[in-house]
Image (cartoon, rainbow, N blue to C red; front, side, top):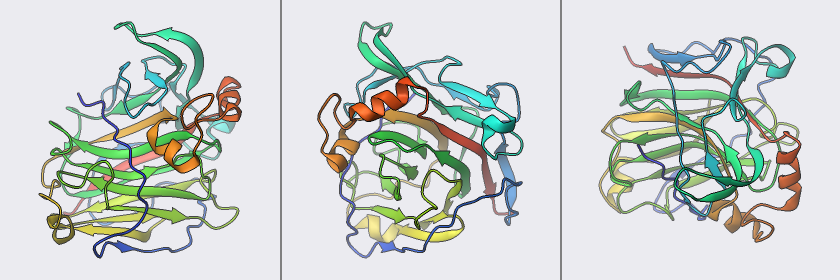
Length: 298
């Protein structure tokens, strides 16, 4: 099982990577996922009373990766489902990943953390190659918070390939997408920000998607193309790592290398200020997921 999240800070587009900047509009109405061409091969609208473990694994790790400040644990305090008003507009309910302040939390291997959080994946339960993976997500504002929606292969990183559909590090007017593979990992040149219109930032519902073909990756936010990477582009750096199967991941990290490189904050935690600690303490830092869907061409 992979526990890796490698940081990067270059949000500059190199070597002909296609980056587009359409204005993303908030998804104000909760509805069924819009119809798309192809066969639905995975779907979860989190309408059950708890996480469907026939579809998802809960990861537990105390590893210090990217200097992140959380330990991932398996508890209803950090991973749970909600319905009604608590779902904030998600008609059939929503998944919630919510970090918790827990000073001195000790993992089984003896490491200490001040925060616990949630990370889930579909490895071994749903792995796929080629198709469209999308999720409808809503976030809460907070500097240095680091929720993400992404795909990862099995095996050694970065040879296994990583597709970051949506990462957010606390700058509420933008989210980013990226790819990592051999020769273009960590400080990957293949990364792009999507800036949102005022009033339609990450605190509103948005659909974050990637269309994955044998030759390219097309990232779309609210149905509009914001970034494209193809095999020829990555070939200038290393092997195309996107022919093998990947699994889905949703996680909520805190602080660490990527947020710190964006915001420059070093205390009280690397990449995360006291205001965000207070937000977590009050239970107000969370990631809501209305639904996740994967479709493949018929």
